[in-house]
Amino acid sequence: MKSFSILLCICLLNLVTFLSSAVSEESIQRKTSAPPEIKSTWDDLTDGIENSSQWDAHQALLRQHYLDLIRDQHKPDKPPLDLIIHDTVIVENVYTRKLISYAVEADERAYAYLGIPLNLAKKAPAVVALHGTYVNGKDRVAGLIDNPNKAYLDHLCRRGYIVIAPEHFVSGHRTPAKGAYDTEEFYKKHPEWTAVGKFTYEHSIAIDVLQSLKEVDPKNIGALGHSLGGHGTFFLAAYDSRIKAAAANCSASFFRHNTKADAWARNHWYIYFKHLRPEMLKGNLPPIDFHEIISLIAPRAFLDLSGMNDGDPATQRQRILMLMKIMEVYELEEAPENFAFYAHGRKHSVAHESRMLMYGWMDTHLKPIEDTETKLVTP
Image 1 (tube, rainbow, N blue to C red):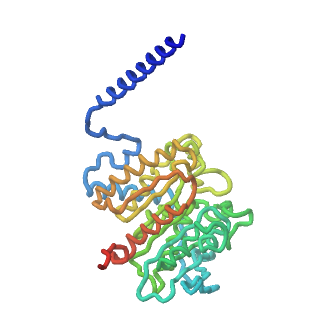
Image 2: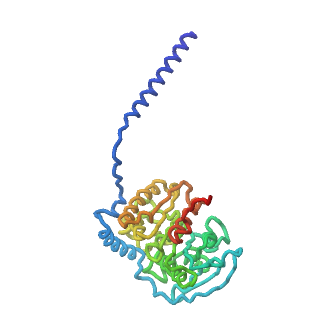
Image 3: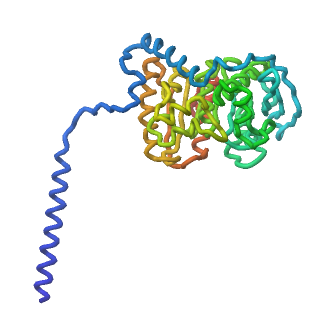
């Protein structure tokens, strides 16, 4: 019986060795080949476009679709800024933080924090730092409350940037009677406009504020943000060409391949695009999507950061295909170095590495090359 068991073990060992060898031999049979072409529904961005001249014409058409989406034609006349400084604090002898307000409509003022580093030797680059869906958003961006990972104003001022952190129009000082981010009163006042058009227009006025300051280098202005501030960033950069570099973190999904697309046109609380609801309830999407809006930023610098497990994984994986297609636009514009994306598994967050990528992106595109170039060690 013992010898039979030994024989059985030997047979099993030989079988395992044979199967391992067979698998190994099969894997060796793999052949070299050219990479297959990757096709996706995002290919419509550049279908039929073969050169930069054709892209320029298509980009002009997309821009009009974008302005139609946000209903830009219904924005009010821009009033004089009438900038007021309400409070000034020196933070750790590094920078000055000012609470400011300025006119965005004839009867409406926006509030923001403005950070200016002390002892600037020359005009400095500036950043519009946009907060997420948080009732006291600008306070969080200033590092005064809640999550210090989102204290972009504090972080960037310490890196030599002038920073404006505007408050979203339905939060903070302007929180509606029904609560933060409720847009009912906005749509009563502006029934033909959109919330996206409103916040994008106001963020553009924040650029006016920066350009009015003697300390700001007006040719080197960037924008960044997370979540609501993330998609606010690319909406702004697509809208206003004064943004030289933008970085959007966890900036939401898009219209297509999104089972919750109608959330962009919901009928309560924060309503992004009220006019889209009737068609979206029929399953019809608008004539422009986010890859086309982001492409309006090209050839200016844009960095996209996203969590592959931020919401529906299947939807977020479509983002990679979308971004790969946007890269083709930057190649058409002969500016591939101005586009990048980073996908991670940290869900809806602004982790250390994400912040460093965003801040490094600003450094690369807004600061002089001597500020970022490396040097050899002196012997």
